[in-house]
Image 1 (tube, rainbow over the protein chains, first blue to last red):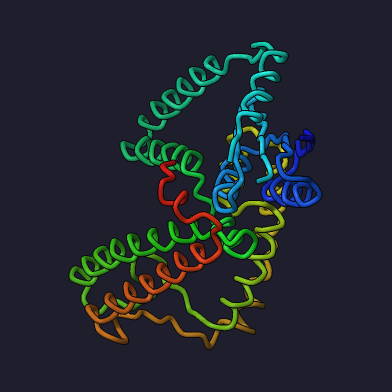
Image 2: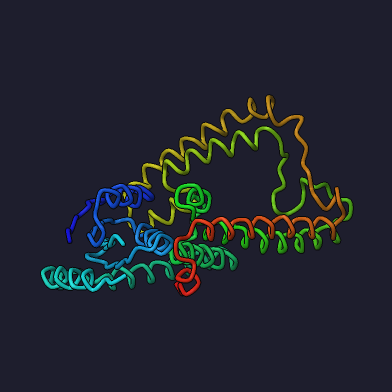
Length: 74
Length: 239
């Protein structure tokens, strides 16, 4: 199991999700991607996307106005 | 899908980070005091101003909490095969069409023989310019990551980038106003203002509008379901 961090700070919606999808494509089953974003919409959008595509997801507000989104490849 | 691994990783990082988040409560209290103070100041000018002020602030809050984003409503069906916001928009259109029809009927009862252009709800002539404008606006809003309301909401949220968009917006609208006579002459002069109740009759126009929206809603729901890997989970989803 590999853990990969993806820095998407200061990227506007929907760039964080597009970059996450691209990163997940190169990863193996069970690997975890941690997306860092300060776009509050990104977390909501990714939750929707994860649900629709069968990914497990966790979201935490790591700092004021900054979120960490954990995605595990199924 | 087992995700205990993610929970473990999350907890690990949370421990390292400590609790060094600054409290936002003082800002919230400050903002509330500011809102009330301005509201009180406006009250001295006109009794209706604080109501507009309050509704504006409430709308901003609702827009932020609901993540109702006009850009995402049109972008996500194409980009992510997700039509949730588009369906929300179709519902909003159904509600506002009904509301505006009532307001317009009331207006027509008081002003018999009023022209369609005078009705509340700002009816504009439709034509080629609508298509061109919508296309240009669509490109712009996706690049900017927000329409007018989305940009204002994100500025309120504390983002810096939308200030650039707002500047562009101000320049664009000013420029548009300057060139408006030219556009009007080339594209809009011969275009007609179409008010559906005038064409089909009030009841038929209402049924037609609702029917069209219902068809669009069903199509949007079907489209998302078709592109979902896990339909059961979607239905169990609460938030």
